[in-house]
Image (cartoon, rainbow over all chains, first blue to last red; front, side, top):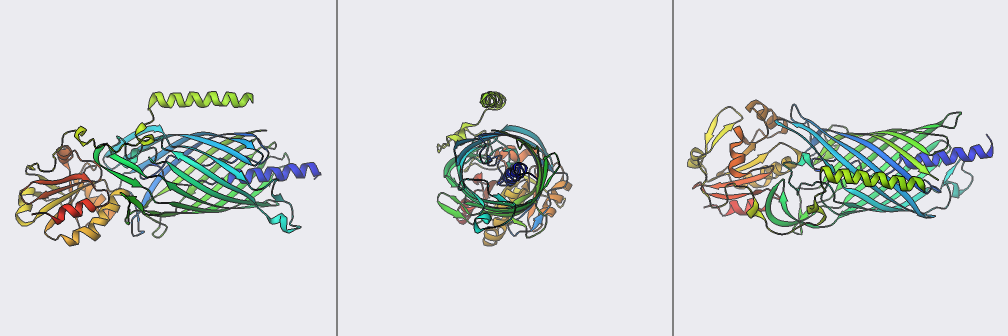
Length: 327
Length: 181
């Protein structure tokens, strides 16, 4: 392999690795959920990225407050489709900004209820700061510097443009957003050695307190509510297989841990709130040789067993995503 | 940068279509602390006398409010759809509130299932067979109280409505029950 080909090969692996390991919160959407979209990360040296995705989330029972797994009622079929478009733009050698706009469709059959609702989800926008100046993938480890990962610090805001439980909706299955201004701080460590990749990510979300005077379509005595902080940790690993044409396929396995702490009502912690959830992720990504086009297919799911969550629905999220990079 | 311009045109078009079909609610962008309960559609309010209610129990029997109040000091009705949010509330009622008020009847009212059999299956599947549960046939109670998910009703021994609001964190329910006559 010539030096040029090697260089292209590793650049490509780094690009795919970052694209595949993008920190996805894997959070449920309706039924206490979100509709917020994920962060977008622009590859090093690229100037602009366009991203579009279709996410299908199927609800698959829930864990109660004791951590016991419970199936949904017989005849239930709860789904949410999220169509997102987004972009990332490099504003500085080491700083990029992004925005993602979801559109949400809820398709629910729940015992005697049947509904289809749709609307804008919560818009996400933010910045990622790259704490490295060159591509951090290596063919072999020759020095200490070679094991230093690509490190990203991120900050993003989720703007409550969706329909929340505090709007005129009959139940929690029909919402498209959370209803809170939320700020998220993240750290992503990504390292590729030869064809292997490993990523570790952590992020913490804080939501602003807000007043509420309506719940599920009914005006209520106003009160103030603030969700608890949310911690998300993700670890994933991937392997890239490159074709002779330099097109490539990357397979990824990941694990995610999410914990939300107690929410506050009128400044007092509600100790029946909060949740915990373990996620698993399987993904595959195809990238063209020029690295400008990536198609990803991810499946994030929970194991429907007692002990894998608390106070949270179990879901299966299937995502088909296309990204195009402009140099 | 041609693509960038083109892309923003697409984004603008999509946003325009989103806003045309289903406007972004401003209530979340600019949340409001104003008490607007006077705008609620009709429904019995605290202080109103509750007419005699028939409960269609999931065990196939029926009860009436008047009969229950001959032996109980009050009735709590929780509107449930057996979802995770409801489970959190019902669990709190079971563990924290119900044991403190043995003279109050606690009802889980299923307002989403079409049949008694379906309501019973939901109650059993959710693990709440230790509660009395009833089906809201023809949405009579939903209409009477303008109930929705997690609406919580308290009726005292004299059939006077003491509470009709969302469960929230259960503090209001505890407070109302503690001063029942």
